[in-house]
Image (cartoon, rainbow, N blue to C red; front, side):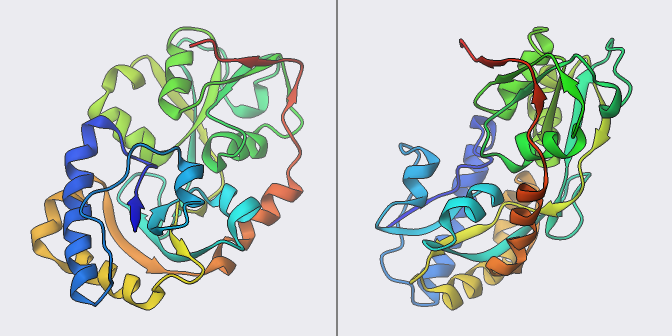
Length: 263
């Protein structure tokens, strides 16, 4: 079996992520889950994790889940993060520009070049589609990650981006240079945060039991705090139906040019 938690696995947080997994794995074994791996996989792209035939547990973004994985994966629980912009199992994106930008709000971003991590990102792309609906843009830059989108603003390769509020909190704490000289001009509407998932035939009840036990385990308090994890709310795919509804109802970005990230 394999497990992976790739969504906030910054190098600065890997010790905490590994500690969280070690504790969660211990609780999984305690409730009778067989084949729990000792370590997380970090050698696979996220899609390869979500499609792996031996997957036990992973975290995914809500947008690819509703677009492609509802028939393959089931939601175990939604994390509740201790970051500004999160409320219970929901989260939002910050809309960010440079501090010296004339852009005061997303609605007056006409002619801007926007940066986004990928078109399958709820917080980086769908959030932009929501707040910039109908706003004519000069171009869009696909960067590959939220950190790279912030860097694109720093380097003046783009004017505006959307970054989920957990990533924004991590960047401000661990890579303040990424947030330096930037300012928040708005927030996207709240949507369900990134779910923990297992295959359709995965041990759902025991996974939820182990998560509950890990969240109550005082030995894991430091790891949870480092990862901004407050709690988990058991959920199923219906909790993410709203993501699909928003995706279908929201028009694409009104852009003149799509740019590829050269670095």
